[in-house]
View 1 (cartoon, rainbow, N blue to C red):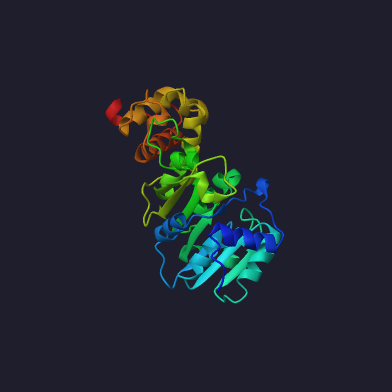
View 2 (view 1 turned 45 degrees about the horizontal axis):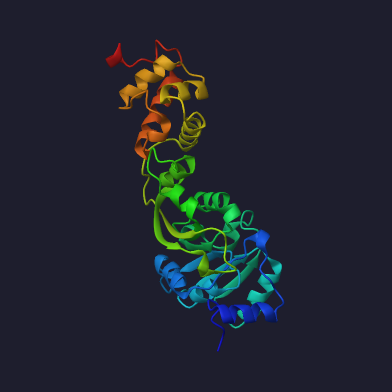
Amino acid sequence: MPPKLVRLGDLTTVLRRHEHSPVHRRGQNFLVDGNVLEKIVAAALLSPDDTVLEIGAGAGALTQALADLTRRVVAVEIDRRLGDILRQLFRDRDNIEIVVGDALRLPWSDLVSPEKTIVVANLPYCLTTPLWTRLVESGFPRQVLMVQKEVAERAVANPAEPAYGAFTLFLAYHGRVEVVAKVPPTAFFPQPAVHSCIVRFTRHSSPLVTADHALWQAVVRIAFRYRRKTLRRALAEGFALPAHALAVHLRAVGLDPERRGETLSVQEFAAACRAVAAVRQAPDSADSVPEVER
């Protein structure tokens, strides 16, 4: 009978047999809580025909559970030693493919079809933001991730809350984030110094807002760079546009120019984009004022 890698005893036996110790600098904290494992798998909403991309396969506990339920699991692990262990453990499983490589650089389209693949991952906490950003930009429709609690709080923060920021809005632009469960340090071996959360990202089936993506990113970035300034002043300084014209166009789209960017919702940032676009098209402040305001 194959080992149940989520059990601490089986895990340590496998690691000892292969003379491997967890590498702290790579964030190797292996899941040893069966209840948490079940929550991750349940959150992924898997079917037998699914393909799953797993990032941070570690010692294979999650890989094993995913392969029991799906057609194919592509498990990515950056540690070559762990990759060799995983290949040995799963040598008789024809629906598991072990890929040794850096998830920040691997070409996803060479491994899977992103738009048809579910991501399940225990992301290295030091790389969570760039990795999650890359996954979202690559078009994966559903992602179930283990992340640090503070990252989860940023992902679901509301306007004006301390955790609310550009990353919150980046995720909201592309999809919906839910916190599935909180996970204590005791769920891992060795235990990390932080608490964790399971989160699920579901991509919007149609755009939540209509805004040019490049302009959206610029408006959000500027609003939070100058978060202590009013929206009118922040955008005027960031885009080198006349503040008076911006104020007029912000009012025209239903926004108070004296609000701060950190208080704006996703839809309100889209409105701010329309105001900026209008002023940029007619940079002279006199020409940029709508007829209704003249």
